[in-house]
Amino acid sequence: MTELHGMEASDIRTQDANQMNTWYCYMSYETTQVCVCTGSCWCHIPCRALKHKQPSHQEQNCCSLEVAWLTQGHPRAGVAACACIAVAQSQLSKAVFDSPYAEAAFDEIVSKHVVDLTKLGQAVLHSKRAPEKVFGLLDMHEQLDGHMSVLSEVLSNTNSGSLLRDLRGLHERLQVEIQETFTDFLGSISKDPAKNTVPDGTVHPLTATTLSFLKRLFTYKSALHILFQGEPDQEADPAVVQHMSETVLQLLDSLHANLLAKAKTYKNKALSALFLMNNVHYLVKAVESSPALAVVGEDWIELHRDQVEQYGEEYQDQSWGPLIALVKDNRPPPSRVVTSAKDRGAIKELFLTLNGYIQGLQEQQSQWTIPDTLLRSNMKDAIAEDFLPSYNEFLEAYKGVDFTKSPEKYFKYSVKDVQAMLLETFAR
Image 1 (tube, rainbow, N blue to C red):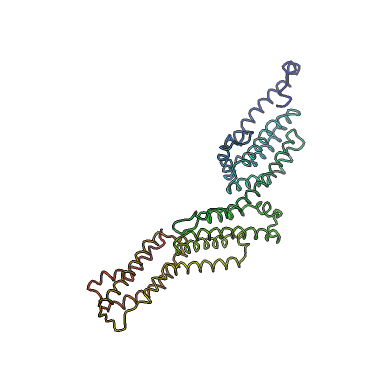
Image 2 (tube, rainbow, N blue to C red):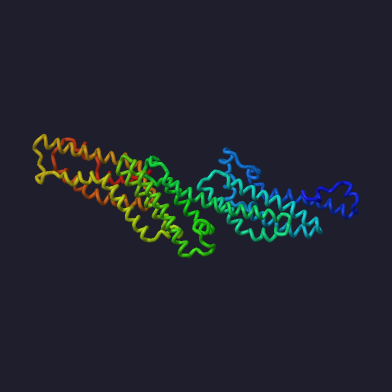
């Protein structure tokens, strides 16, 4: 409280009526303004954030609410609101009161908001460290960047001026926390357990969240300056771009290495190749679609495009390759005449093996996934192109061979049946 609040009753009685009225007006003004400004600025912040104490272990998990509040950017909250109130109160208090009431009203009202803003920053800083926290930190850091000059101008040479040190200290600590959170995130990529896989070979959550994190991170103008020592509004600085490129490459290489480790845990080699194809394809598409990530260079993109093709070919070799070899390497004799029971039995066994393999692929790969529409379509086309012509020749060759009295038992899947089966493949 200011010294005005500490006036004794005996002192008040000695003042003339005008001064007495001024004092009562001041008290009413201050009470009203504090209530109005506090209600408008901080009503959307969890009360826990405004407690002046270190969060407990349980509260750390809950402090994501403060981070969520920051990332939502509520128009009536945060640094912008605090700056607006400071400017407005500076003008209003001077218009309503003479000195010293004007200065006292300003200090009492504005200091509450500066203190609450600092407490909120401390709550966010002490909350549990997680990758998504960096966006709340960046939001608050950018807001402080944008309004620090206004706050400095208004608060300087007032009793609230000492609070500027707290705001500047908060600004610096936010920057350090952003850097350390990002460093932790880089290290967490390689630590994701190899056994943490996806059963259908789709894009792994680690891949999706990592690329989503990076793309969102670089939408912040301050991220380049804070993480790569670049000057604000100088994104084209070669040294900064080089540092950024090296960091992104390090992260993508770490992610790729982790994906390779995960792929090795699959017992099915075809599924392992499908998993790598999906995930590396996702990496390439994400890099291509982001100017910030594209700093890794065209050579990286081309190299990993080739890897997508290699993994796709490996998937085909491991899954459909044996089936293609089966129909190509087992054709009937030129005469198409089978006389011995042994030869007839061999052909029957061939068809049973073939039908079992097709059925197995149908059951197995209808549970697998290629999430990218174009990649899925291209893979289906490649399988059809490699298998269907040979399979059609195989069926036509054996139609003229008299090896069974029940052909429907062995000619189980027509070419159209396999085409329909391919439509269901990767449909999960």
